[in-house]
Image 1 (spheres, protein in one colour):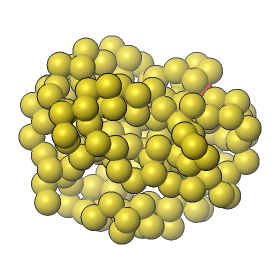
Image 2: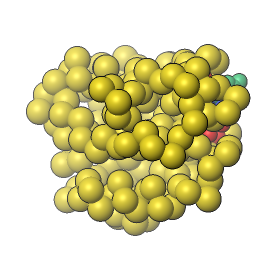
Image 3: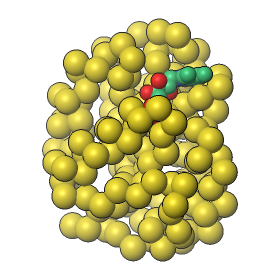
Image 4: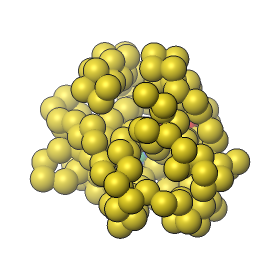
Length: 160
Ligand SMILES: Cc1cc2nc3c(=O)[nH]c(=O)nc-3n(C[C@H](O)[C@H](O)[C@H](O)COP(=O)(O)O)c2cc1C
């Protein structure tokens, strides 16, 4: 299966997670700042990764390149999402950017796979939560980095 991971990252945490996932499943990684519509389209599984900034906002490169995502044909495409965030300092907007990307992908006809349980997290609100589950893999490299490898492995085995 041909997998592309498109990520945005200010501080490097999300980029590092993208690389870790890529290594485990032999995926290609593309920084969203340099992504073309074809990068979103030319794969069997598309994985999008984003940290949340502000108070629930998309990371700046995602914000600046949202039109590239919107221009991509995602109709019927299998898409998985991961979000990095800080559930302690930003408990009210934990991994909200993943919720924003979810809504956009669904609006473009993408089929989102890889929902996960919210057990083990201590946030109070997240727009990435739908019907009691996260719409993708939520990682907290600020407070729960020791749990990330286990979470990534479980998510990947469910996805592939
Ligand atoms: C100014 C600022 C605002 C943030 N806002 C949120 C937020 O609303 N929700 C959240 O879950 N994390 C928030 N975070 C935490 C980051 O998303 C988290 O540290 C992430 O791992 C950063 O990824 P990066 O290193 O790839 O940029 C914020 C961090 C900073 C510095």
